[in-house]
Amino acid sequence: MEFKTKLLFSLALFMCLYSQAQDNPRLKLFNQEHFFIKGAGIDNNVGLTKLELLSKSGANAFRTWSTQNAEAKFDSAQKYNLKVALGIAVHQELHGFDYNDEEAVAQQLEEIKAQVLKYKDRPELMCWVVGNELNLLFDEKGQLALVNPKVYDALEEIIQFIHSVDPIHPVTTTFAGINKKHVKRALERTPSLDIISFQVYGDLLVLPQRVNALNLKIPYMVTEYGAVGHWERPITPWGREIEETSFEKGQGLAYRIQKGIVENKDPLFLGTFVFYWGQKQERTPTWYGLFTTKGESDDRIDELTKYWTGKYPKHKAPVVKSITLNGKKAVDFIVIKEEETLTARIDAIITEEHNYRFHWELMEEVKVKSQGGAFEQEPPLIEMKVIENKDTQITFKKEVKVKSQGGAFEQEPPLIEMKVIENKDTQITFKTPKKEGDYRLFVYVYDEKGKVGTANIPFYVGELKDL
Image 1 (tube, one colour):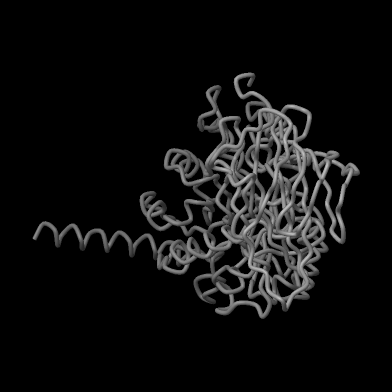
Image 2 (image 1 turned 60 degrees about the horizontal axis):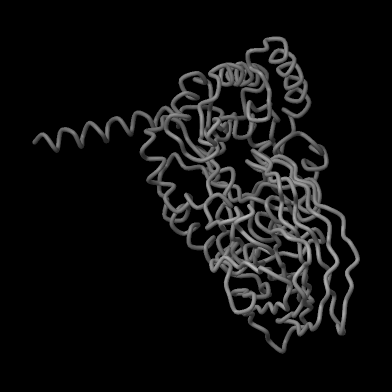
């Protein structure tokens, strides 16, 4: 009897909370029209040129991180029948903004008001995404910390203004991960928030369980998901994250989509935006972006198309399963103590029906990591000395010296000169760089259809005891 009473109480409470969400007039698109988001976060370069592909791949929306190029994005959204979750940039404590500075906070609000008034009447607008990962902050030990409560006081003031001038479109803000303490602090100070958004990578797999533990009273969406994050991957003794191949990323993404999205029957769940419909340098040039700088796409878009439409595209990306260096995998933590000849090989599915082009690059690693998704500059290319190389394109590049954190801009390093002894498409032999340090070897396998398979492997030249 006691169990039945508790069960009935839980059901009644759930229906009450669900009813509250249903009654919000700003959620009409989701509640009455049953719109479920199948979207992507787009960049201002490659991704902006690929919105037709986004639509043809089965997506129905995209999100931004700011109002940069908003007019062009709205126009493209109208052309390709896509909804827009428009980002409003809000300063983070992570990057040095002081929310105790009342004048600076007031100035930020005025700037945001102008943006809202400018775009609130665009018919493609679906919702406002106010601030990105405002909860992201680290203490002196590198552990997650709670932000100043005034961050959320400022956010609530922004939300109230938007509601006062735009009663139609809901407002959300995004959280890095799903942290109960962070969410509790935020929701206590932002009672006007319509939707809460989470940005998860490996944890997409357990999204329903993680969200259920929060006992939310408002709907939620996922505004970033994709390849497993660099902070979730194995790391070498010299501090370099081991990246999956494009094929591994695609397979893992498909599994997490099934478990975290397709099987998620929570009525408060409004949908997702994949990260990142574009190209981004963060730890490497290939980790998060679904495209190369020239616009080639990898396995992940094939898997997204399958999720969004129910079937794979007619033509799929080249499959690169693994990469080794002198027979060793990245998890073997490859250290080269002196100059020697190295041979890298990839395990790839090569078929006669396609014309493949193999492109190898060597980079030094990023030295300073950026935080919170900040910009990371990709370095210029440097001409490489090639020996006995025919009918292939090979360049070598240094890795980024400054590592970003939290998606901040990260500078991509320049290509470095390398002595290539032999190149046989899926295998390359070269001399160890003379300079001591940490490096990463990349391979890109292009086909004639604008698709690519990628892999990379980190290694260290020198004595680790000197680190």
